[in-house]
Length: 82
Image 1 (tube, rainbow, N blue to C red):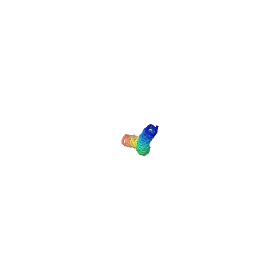
Image 2: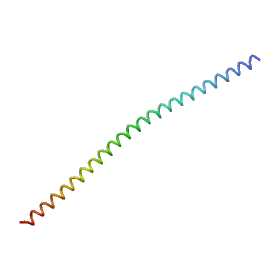
Image 3: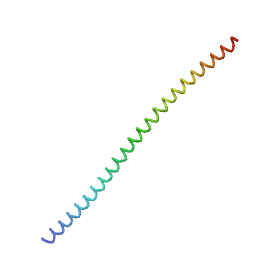
Image 4: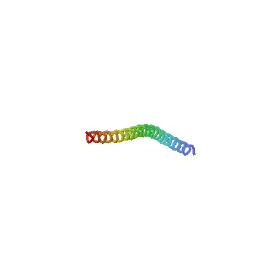
């Protein structure tokens, strides 16, 4: 009877050790996922900033193109009146 209890206790201890190792691995994976999520958020914020700057630059470029076209037309009108 004592041997059976010892065997069951040993088996229980092995299972506890196995569960602890798995818990450690799960915690490690959770930490890695958390770090990756933070990196993804930071990268997303960086990309958002780039997109916003690109849009602003595009709007400035369109405004400059419109102004250049306006100036070209004014020059042509001035040249035609000579």
